[in-house]
Amino acid sequence: MPALPPLAVVDVDGVLADVRHRLHHLDARPPSWPRFFAAADRDGLLEEGERTVRALAEASEVLYLSGRPEHLREVTVRWLARHDLPPGELRLRPEGDHRPGADLKVRALRDLSRTHTVVVLVDDDPRVLDAARAAGYDVLPATWMGRHRSLQRAQEDDGVT
Image (cartoon, rainbow, N blue to C red; front, side, top):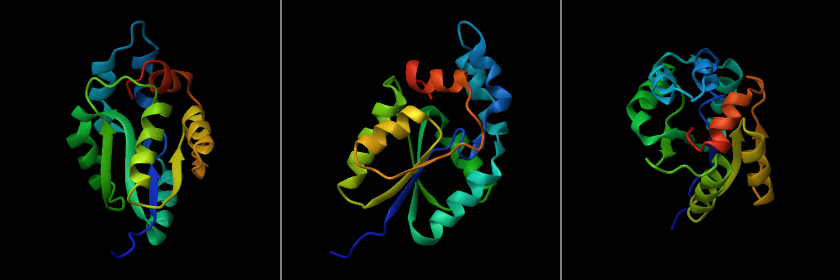
């Protein structure tokens, strides 16, 4: 069986997609998830994320792993295509799955490792990065959008994105 190419796993929100314009929907109490997700198609592209994924795609296969819910698949596929990002499989959070992002993503990395050599995870969530590192994966912290408590709360505490 031929060896599969190495796999670079890249998050979307806060790594490639600039979600700052819609974070105010998460600051509301309770958060307005429908409004937050409805604005996903208007996310800007983070230039550092774009440079990073393009460089990784030169040496690895790319897989996009996002905590976005599955119902945003078409929006996300169109967004990736509109920005002409490297091709790659897209894995999203299953509907009804509200595990913390760290649990969701480390489980996905373990599943992917059965068939691929995962060379790096690029993510913006420190808890995801710490959990992946503790599980033995190399990580690249995506710090270029800055830290936003409302996004971290959504990813880890609410288990929604």
